[in-house]
Length: 250
Length: 257
Image 1 (cartoon, each protein chain N blue to C red):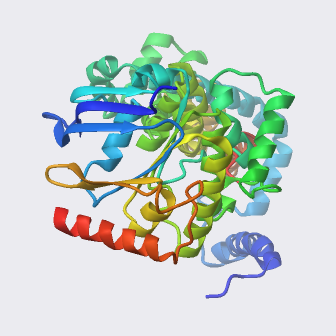
Image 2: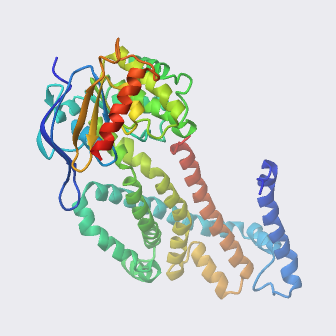
Image 3: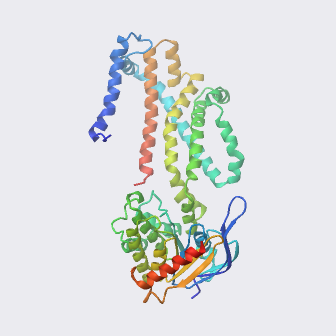
């Protein structure tokens, strides 16, 4: 297949999305899907405009929890990965334990986290952080260890210190894997914050989703979903922008 | 001036999970300072392993090796020895210029004007002027290997170890780089140990050729080519004397394996 011209490649994704929205707007009601199950896009937009104050009031707590959880979880994972690749003893002793914890579904753990940290923002941040932590830890360890034997030999020939090897070889080598993990975390951090809010909260998009569901306000429910998706896209965009600045490979 | 390399009763091998595998036993070798030595041999004869022992990338299993009159470790930590690998081992996130400056950055020299002038001069010397801002993935295989050589020369090494540096290149590029390497050697006076499995390359480059045999690894021919190549290790590829040497090397290799 010949590649599409650049203009088509820019326009087609928007056209594709627009066609689905049009189908949603007109075909679903025609097919008899009731508005309390799937409200039309215009109805959702109307709620976004009408309830803007209410919605932003619920948006910011979730954004704060997801953002803080994203930062804390990933930072902790990066630091632990650095410790592990520099101490084979610690890695051998504790990495299997870490892997075991990773098998516990975080959703099953969240009631306990809420019992420990109460009903404020802290447990949501903790859940978002934990959900980001494991994939980044594993990717970061792999990334820091991904320099090849001849690259390590090159640095040995240069009599490089451990710090030089870390700063000029291991860290830059790890960045592509780290960023692919951060891209995924940008969505999972939001999931973590929302799940935390489901279990016990009166603020945040998660709380709003639960309330709207119980009150059969499906247009408000969809508006909350749109906002959570926008939040994840926002964090994702920040990650991609940071990657563009930091990772350079020609 | 001390000899570049002086090995006595040297056993070399590489470590494995269980016990080290010995590939060369009882090697005695003296390499004069400033000379160009080709080391030729089939895969598995230990020629790369020998180079790694001289570089202090691997410890010797027995015997002693003296490099530039000191221990291999001392010479490596003084950064008097540089290594050019078979794959160029350029760091993909650094530009050509940044790759060439790496040795001095790691040696914690500040990036002074003198250093950047030197890196530019080396890029010119290797035919890479104008490529300083490119990234490795924007270069051909031959260009990448030139950058690797420029990087090795950046630290002004007294001994240059080259492990099949042109093994992955096409023959035309390889011939050109061979000529450039000889010019470089005549200019700098650096001792070069050049490992290859190409008979033509070994004969054309070396003032002296060492043919290694495998199982067990040993020297099966030590041929001085100075009488053939005068002056200053010069000859043409079609020189009958060189062609005769190549036949001799081929026969030694055949006998050894």
